[in-house]
Image (tube, rainbow, N blue to C red):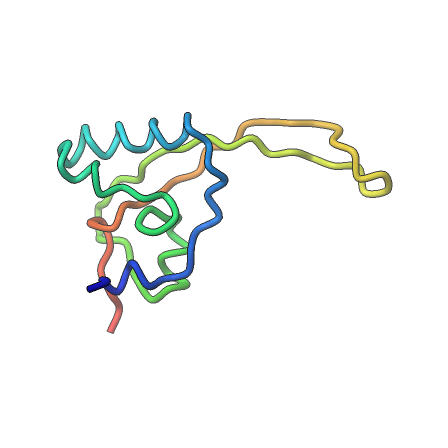
Length: 101
């Protein structure tokens, strides 16, 4: 039987192995290896706004997990990438949120 979190729309995780392992290690450090095995970046680890959009709130005092993504800035006319830069995003795992009634 699926939990309510498992029925939410998938996240926009692009499949970076480096980000996956980094976030999984942070979860393992904070919550234990058993909990880290439950980590699925497409389902149960989201940004604050993504949780909020799906009627969940981050628990008071919860510390975010950090992930770095590469942002590409494109030329408006040609569509070619003119600049790439890293951006840190803050994620929250499923046990750091609760359902809004």
